[in-house]
Amino acid sequence: MAGRALPRRVIVDDTDPQIQYSTSDQWISSAGGANGGKGVGGPAFWNATRVALGTASLSFRFNGSSPQVFGTSLGAGLECFVDGTSIGSTGGPLSGNNSQSQDSDLLCDGSTFVEGREHILTLNVSAVPQLETKLWLNYITYIPFASVPPGATTLVDRLDPAITYWPVKKWNTPSDLYAYATFTQVNGSYLKFNFNGTSVSWVGYTPGQEPPTNATYSIDGSEWVPFLLNTPPSGLNMSNQVFFTLPDLSPGPHSLVVMHRGDNTSAPLTLNHFVITSASASSLPPAMSSAVATNHKINVSILEAIVDGTIGGIVVLCIVAFLLWRRNHRRRFGNREWLDIEKDNGKLPPHVTPFDAMPSDPTMAETRSCIPKAHFVPIGNSFELSPHNVHDSPSGIAQPGAVPKSRNCNVWKALPRIPPAVLVREDSRGAGGTADGHVDPPPSYAS
Image (cartoon, rainbow, N blue to C red; front, side, top):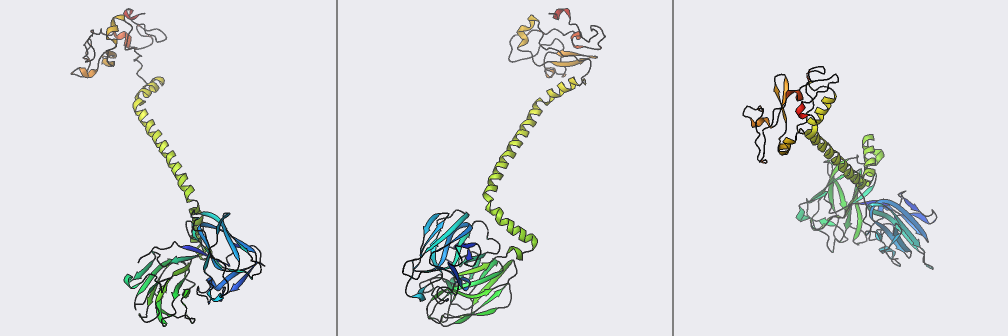
């Protein structure tokens, strides 16, 4: 089906307590609207309007975007504001032929306010001198920011994706004759509408030329119920005609199927929009009611939650990176730290003493820069220093006095065998030791 669906709008009736009127004597209720529902625009929403007598004003606070005001102005000046910014008016004052008045005239259009947040809509009505001025307020609509508030009434456009037409080719888009609706004149053509709410109304367009016929509907697979596709007595094409309303549905999902029973010589089955009412918080089970009420508040702050989550994610990544670095650091230096701790706790073998692998003998100066890492090799009950890597020996054990191989050094001297007295501490009172456990170095190493 050609065309693009309009976004779903919340409809706020003139009787809604969210609308704050200036004073009760400036606004009065009016049943039937500006022309008792006989105008070409059809009856007023819920068959009632609010009339401003002379100078008056109202305000409406909402959470969403693109507010619009619908009604009829006869001789009254009006101007609308959103958050203090004027959006003017689109409906000029009418005069004379009251039969042409439409309670659904677009009076103010704030479609440029697309930012989804809390706004305040203000309508100011001014009297025109020497004229009996009146303004009929029918309803206000807006696009909700995140979710439809509990108990709200919503307008669902005829091209909404929740509506399925079948066969598609048997349904026609609006034309000059049916300017406000999708329609069919083929017997057996139907549409299916899935929705979630407690009531639904079918609103269509009625041409004044074809004879009346029948159509049927079925809700949630129940038996077919017939309804009349009537022709207006005035013979005028009339919009906003309510074909039927199904109230008091149980809260939850529903499926509505509507089928045309006429033919191409009778009145068409037309659809402009559906009006559905969502379940109020009080009509839902306690758990679901709490979830719906809090969900609306949560969605309003969804941007803040996204920002907080992003910051939290960055903090977590930083912590993980630090832990990985610390683990790698411990793997690299953990053995050395363990040796230091074990030495401090006295758990190293008591006969091993610290040893300087680079003695101060001047004769070793040439080889000092080329000596590989020192290794202790067990010899009997003592330990002896090997001046080169044990893997240089085929047996895996360094041989005393051997010359280590190196590709980086050209000058090497055979390293003298280190006397065991330098490496061995059998006891603090043993040979070569003093009472405090100090081991005297050999004479050749004394400074």
